[in-house]
Image (cartoon, rainbow, N blue to C red; front, side, top):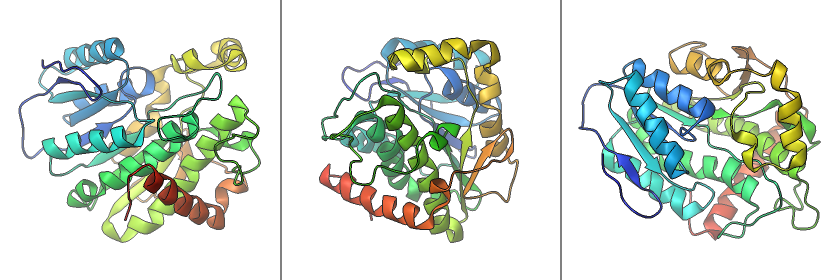
Length: 302
């Protein structure tokens, strides 16, 4: 195990192997992401995982290695709400492999109050959407190298229906902030990104989908406001385990629904979308705005 100080710590770097599939899984230090990383490792994948919290990342790595002792697993610490750290994480991935068969964009956040990142973005929008947008672009050459058959899977949510549309005139919610709207908007953005990205890489042999995992009992609400915590508490009797929440992601990862792309899935099948999530114009508009915002943060996307 190697430990380094500062953002982007690599907790462990295994030996290089050739001829096996490589997956990148963000938000893998707990919950759904940990289950996905663990089960892919069990299934013979090389896994490059990302976590933000040091202690949880170390514990997750230990669990994955215990479940799959022969697997090659890297755990890299990075705060994906800041765009240059997203870029640095992608560079670390690219330095350790020349191709990726699977990218699982699972890292996410729910806010207790409005906070701005070092780039000046509202944190939820930055962590849940802009990080996905930038990381997928940065890793696109590696996904193309593994095509056809490579995939991008993003954890979205039924919460996208809790907002009428993107707050196009106030994406940063600087004028009026709502924690629930911030989260719902970011999940709507995940779906719009998925649909637009799928169109753009279709002829490269890359499939792009997103998944509603269900209401899962994880530590996801730990930074949420009182309303979020209460929702998770009241929903606990009906909630899913992280293993159940990871089911559709793992189905796609292991070759299920082989023709699905640009889809929003729940319980292993396409699920209903809000009107805003179906908007072709909205998907294209968000794409252009995301390019502009990441460029302002010093990260140009081609």
